[in-house]
Length: 273
Image 1 (tube, rainbow, N blue to C red):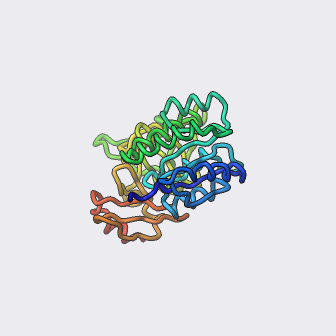
Image 2 (cartoon, helix red, strand yellow):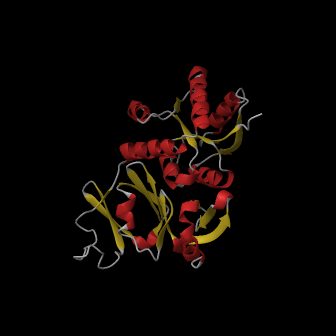
Image 3 (cartoon, one colour):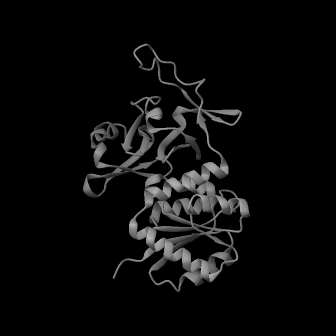
């Protein structure tokens, strides 16, 4: 018998969590492994339990659902079904990015369609595409940044940087955030966007992996996966995984995967752990 799809429920309302739990009991191929009352608990549960699926409320005090998505590493992101009382504008955004959602109060027929879709997605292992859809949703609903061309690193005639920058300028509308490079924990890619994780926040930037690699000092930042750059000074533990891969544990407990393709970086990373 196939293993059940392991899910967590994230909602600050106890009755809402209980109601969804009771409805999900009818789906025997799903297992609820944790219930979280806030965003902080959700981020911790994903890191500890590695669920396949997360039922995520958007409107929560403190760390809301969108911030939860920002804080979860690309290689750890489960499938997400939004559970929300959001207005029509947000629902249109979910539809535009082909992401599943359940409206409060829950309707059994809609839940059944969602569970069927989740099964199909899970069977086809479309996790990378799902992550790209989630980040595109964040960009459209909460805004996206751009690397500020007026403050980018000056280059010499040979095309090499004269020095590595101390700050990363991110333009958000008319405002420019000057993010200290040393504060960056890791950066991961999702489609046309890069997610810059620093100081407990995530900045969604329309840029490429190459642009970041050209602007980050390789003595501090190394690519450990085709979609991930890590600040090696933030690594606190490294443990072997399957097929020659490793898990890197950063300050704050986030886990990132070092893939086989980047095993040549292992010696430098070990020297900084």
